[in-house]
Structures are given as C-alpha cells and as structure tokens.
Length: 520
Image (cartoon, rainbow, N blue to C red):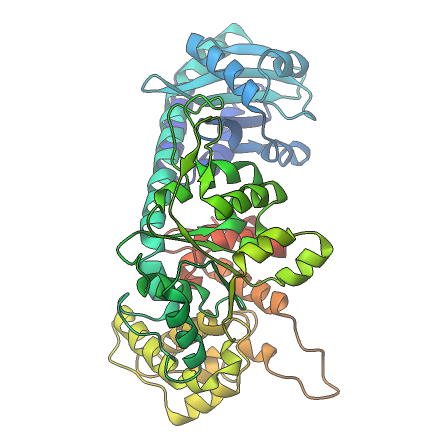
C-alpha cells in the first residue's frame, strides 16, 4: 500500500508540473502500469458547449495502440450517457465491447481488451472520464477499484485547470485579435495611424476605400496572404458611419464545419446536449458595426446558404430557435482564393458571389508595390528594436536594395518577420539583412527557412519554389524554434505574428504535424 501512495504522489506531481494535460497523461502511463495490469491510459473530456466528447490525453506502452485513441469523437446523444454515469460516480469495469455499449463514446472502435474507468468530477461538474485499459490477460482486482478512486482527484483537477487555462487563452486571444495582434502584424502603432503606402503603392486602394466607405455595400477584398486585407477592412470600418460600432473579425477557415452555424448565428438554450444557455453569434455581436469574414472561400456549402439569406434581408434564426432576428451589419469579406474559379467548379455559390462582390477590391502584393518597402522596413525596424530593447535601427541603402530585389511571397507579414530576424541576428547593434534573407553568413536552411530559396531562379537552375513550399518551410522553422508549441508567449503563432487558429488551419492545409517538433 505504501508503494501505491508513492504512485499517487507521482501522479500529483505530473498533474501539477505540466501545463499541457496531454503530456501529463502520456507520462503517467509507465507510472500507472506498475500497480495496475494496464498498457493504455486515456482521458476523455466532455465539451458541453459543442456537445462533444473529445480526447484530452492518451498514452500507451505499446506502439500499436498509442495513436488510435487520439482520433475519435462522438455524437451528442453519447454525451448524455456519460453525464448520467458521472452523476452516480461509480467505477466501471468491463471488456471493450460491453464498455462501448454501456458507456458509448469513451473507447475507439478498434480497441480490444478490458477497461477500468472512473468519472472525473470537479466542483459538482462532470468533466470526463479516466480510462485504464489493458490488452493483457491479467484481470483487474477489487483493490484496483479502490486505487482508481484515489487517482480521480489529481486527474480531475489537472483536467479542470487545463480547460480553464485554454478558455482564458481563447478569451485573451479574442480580445487582442482586433487590437494588438492586428497592429503588430500590419505595422501600425495605433488604429488612427494612416496606412503605410497610402501615398505610394496603395494610393488607388486607399482612394477606393474612401469611396466605398460612404455606403453600406458589401466589399470583397482579394489578395495574397499577408498583403494587408485586414488593414483595408479596418480602414473601411473606420471611415464609415459605423465607426462607433463594433468591428469583429471571423476566420471562416478556422471554424469546424459542424460549428459554423452556432458561431455565426448563435444557438438557443437546449438546442443540443450541453447548450446550457443562449449564445449570441458573430452577427448579433456585430450589430450596428462591421463583420469581417476572412477566408470566406473556406465556408462549407450549408453555411453559404444561411449567409446568403442574412445578406439579402438581414434576418436569421439561432440554431434551435424559432424567432426571427434582425441585425444591421455591414459585411466585408476577404479571401486569397480564386472565387471565380470556385464558382465555376461549383465549390462556391454563384448567388453568394454576386452578393459579396458588390465592390471587389484587389490588394496588390508587396512585390508589385516595392516603393512601399523603404517606409515599411524602417517602421518594422524601429518597432522590433523597441520591442527587443535595442537602440533605434534603420535599414541602410544596401539593405533596401536587397529587400526590394526579393519577391516577398509572404508579403508584409514576411517582411516584418525578416526585419525582426535581422535585428536579432545583428545582436541589436544593426540590421543583419543578408543573414535574415539567407544570402550569406552561418545561418542556413537547418536554422530557419532560407528566404533566398524563394529568389527568382535563373534559366537552367532548379524550379522556382511554390508559395506553399516557402510557407511550409517557414512554419516548420517556427515550430522548431518554439519546440512544437503553437500558442502561448513562446509559441510559433507569436513568432509568425498570426492568430493560433489561423496557424493551425494552415498547418492542416499544408499537412504539417506539430507533434514531430515537440521536445521534452
């Protein structure tokens, strides 16, 4: 019994010393395999807001079953079964088949073995389930039930803290998304600042913004990733009669398809299991202001239908509701995709295209407005120097020539990253632009994606790399530097100066697995 007390202490230590709950679960497997006849540990978490059961953490001593539990969810009906069991707080022991029948949603379909499970409750709330599973022939004993009960508290508290931390992170990111993140990414000290390039490369764009801002017509911003579409959307709002109202940005590509309706239009209490209260969607929250629908080309077909209706007459219904609601919202949409081609293929509704493209506005890429580069580079250099505690720095004439010659597949966002890297590589004493671009010096592809690889190739040399290739290398370099962390102060999203949800969406699109960059 004394040895098991040491096991409980070790579990408490793991639960309290790891901010990543999934990491604590993975490390707990060899610890729990000593007193229990198990080879797999799985923690299932109830997501009440979305009425789902998801895997919060898993680990196994056997390679064959280590990955399988990570990739499954369940339907809302199964959530009710788990909540009912959790209210009784009774440990569960059965084989895999009986467990899938009696407690649907806590085991993957391909797992075969025996299961000992206990509910994870905290502050009278059912959080999920701790599952100790085994493919071994040795059965569980009555003492294992008592031992399991001693483990429920540390796992419950660790899961609660992990969820609470995640919620706080989401709230903070949402609050900063339209302020600090926007200003940092797009080179402005304050919302009232003029757009850099408004008198040069963006002169026509700024004039068009002033024209369309006087009306409430929908605007469609077209341009490459990082070219400044969000800055244009903010400028349209600030020059309109709605400037005193809210300006909200939604990344349509970062919302799971099954949650689009709830996120955009809200839901009523009881509309699905776990919907404990009414929820206002983005359209209601933007009433009287502007809603910026970024990456609108990523919207699934069903959401396109509902979006068309609200653009036509301003009316909609919440999910699970029967009351027709009205809002006064100006929609500004943006995409880097070719929507005309998507309409031709049938991937985007033509009637929605006509609605959102009343005033299409193309934001030119940075390589087509190189006259803006000196002012942008100087601005980013001063900003990076201030942030890194260096004296004021400005690029030299030779630095500007090299920056102008580079094609900038990542546009303004990439320019900001290169300048900040130049400040770091210059040891805060100057700008190491050549090294930051990968032109010379000791830094190379193993340290970060060499921007020189994207320079125009001469005839007879290797093919010009695609934008996806450059973006993949850049994201992988950020993940390597952040040791696989996506969000947080030292995460890849902070290094790349983009929203973590946007980064995850791009990683999925490019097939980048963050777990491969994790280090202990």
